[in-house]
Each structure stands twice: as C-alpha cells, then as structure tokens.
Image (cartoon, rainbow, N blue to C red):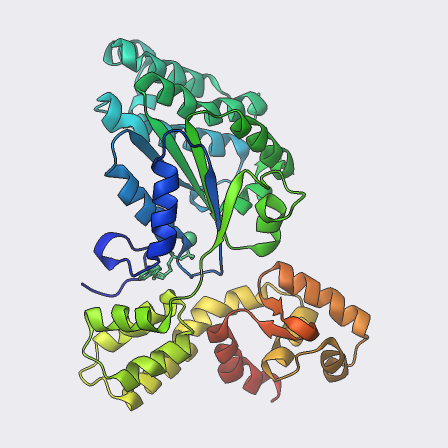
Length: 386
Ligand SMILES: Nc1ncnc2c1ncn2[C@@H]1O[C@H](COP(=O)(O)OP(=O)(O)O)[C@@H](O)[C@H]1O
Ligand SMILES: [Mg+2]
C-alpha cells in the first residue's frame, strides 16, 4: 500500500461509502435509467468515485460499464469523440459477448476478414458498428455519427440482455468540441440529452469540475440535463478519513496528521502528495512535515499552479492576490486595486465561473482551493509586493 497521485479504487479507496452505495444501488437496478452528475473541485476525487463505482458494478451480474474521459481526446473534435466513445462502448461489452479482440484491433482489420471473425449472430451487431465507424469520413455527417455512437449501448444492451452504465468524465469539456474548426458543444449537449431521454437500458453518469460549464451542462434548471440526473457534490475527506489514509501507509503521530489535515483541508490529492514525500523521510516529526509542506508549495506548487495562474488576465490575478491578502468584499477589493466596484464584481463573476473563487454569505468572496491560496501567500505575494 502506497500513496499515489492517480485515481484510486478498491483497497486504496478511502470512504465515501454513502455516495458509493447510493450510486451502486441505483445504477445496478435494471428497471432504472436514472443517472448521476458528480461535481466538485479539481483533485477532490471525482474520477476515483467513478472508477470505484465501475469496479463494484462489474461484480454485479448483467451490467456493462463504460468509462470514458473527454480529457483523453487528443484533437477534441466531434469525429474523434464519436469514434472513441463507440470503441469504448463496444469494448465494455466484450466480456459479455465473448469477443476476443479489442475494438481498436478490429478496426484495423480488413472488412472481409472482419466479417469472418464476427460471423456469429450475436457479434453481427458489432460488425455493423465497426463497418459504420469505418465508413465515417472526417468531419462528415457528424450529427448522424453522434446519434449512432450514443445508441450503440442501447443496441448492445438489447442484444445481450444487459444494462449499460455509461460514465463520461470531464463532461463539461464537451462544450469545447469542434467540428470544421467551429465549436459545436452546445448543439452536442442538446443532442445527447434528446438521445438519452429515449434510453431504456442505459444510464448516464457524468462528472466535471469547471463550475460554469457544469452549470451550463447539468446543474442549472434551464440546462438540458436538469431532472434527468441525480446531482451529487464530491466533497473533501473528513478528518477521520485523512487519518485513515495516512495511517494506512505511514507511522505518524496525531499531531502530524492534524497538521496535514489542516494544510490540505481534506483534499485527497494533497494528502496523497504530502504522504508520498513523507514516505521518503526517515523521521516523521512535526517539523519535518512542515518542511515538506513548504517544499511542496515552492517546488510542486510552481508546477501545479503557476501555469494555471498565468492563464488568467492581469486584473483577475490582481483580484486573486488581494483575496489571498485578506480583502474579501468587492468594496475592499476595489479599494485595494484602485478600480470601480462594478468592474471588480464583473471579474469576480469570471473567477467564480472558472472555479477559483466562491461567494459566501454576505457578499464575502473566498478562494476555492486553500492550498493554492497558501502557494499565493508563500510564492506569489512576496514577489508582487517586491
Ligand atoms: N477516496 C479516496 N481515497 C484515497 N485517495 C483518493 C480518494 N479519492 C481521490 N484520491 C486521491 O486524490 C487525487 C485526485 O483524485 P481524482 O479522482 O483524480 O480527482 P478528480 O477527478 O476530482 O480530479 C489522487 O491522488 C487520488 O489518489
Ligand atoms: Mg478527474
């Protein structure tokens, strides 16, 4: 058992029992096509929840589970999306239909040979799908391709008597899909909604972190998916679970765990990262832990946060720096940066949409990621104030 920065499942997965049990119970129910929309901060554990639910569902009889991440696309165009999705769906059914070859191998096989391989009647549907994928030319007839891709699970499920759970991770990134160099995301989302409304054997599970696009896609009452999916937030680990995660892998004092809990605010990625660094140290004293947290911010923090931070506009960065510096209301911020309150409000809205800033009650604005805030205080603020 060791610390990891990859999504976890099985033995390495800590807690979230309530959410997992709820999801598994609903998703394994063959009479239900109710799905889930998971949202939460970056690095909070959304992918891990999907992978663990997948692992548990695969132990159930009669369920085929597809996991697909929009972030795995290379070109981010609609054709690639449809192709990759079709391939993943067929592959998820492989064990249930006795298909020996991976879909990607089949796609590279000449059609005449393919026909022989897929001659059995239950594999005919796979043959038809692959023939369809191969007949699609770049950027042509994409609407039809999309419809087709989103119906493969229904066809295969009907054919095999299974239920299909289709998981699409980083779902909001669909919004940036392109076709012929124009964004088609909006239309694609609407189309997916319409298609999935008619599903009888497939349940959709999606997850995402970029709040603005997640809102657009699922959370807002005006969005295409409102009411079709059960919305759940993936939250930080509780203190007891940070204890569990650390004690599983390390000999460490309560005092040390408290320190790491306070540093990470229970965001599992940071707990894993500090744990990983601590593993390599002989002593696990409080001083050593504090030193590691500092090293994490100055070394890893620069890799993790700097690039993201630099994609923001100068005004947005200034506002973020001043929030970290203790200004929390638009009035305080306007004074600190010498701008109008209305302008500050506008930028606060942008930053909220990009999931950097949250609004608390009474118009107080705070930063979303406490470790990012520590990095700003330690690395950025000293530079920007000379
Ligand atoms: N339930 C969990 N138990 C232990 N570690 C976790 C858990 N969930 C997430 N992690 C850790 O947190 C980090 C981020 O997880 P991931 O699932 O990729 O988050 P997200 O998809 O929200 O960005 C990884 O290092 C992973 O190992
Ligand atoms: Mg993820």
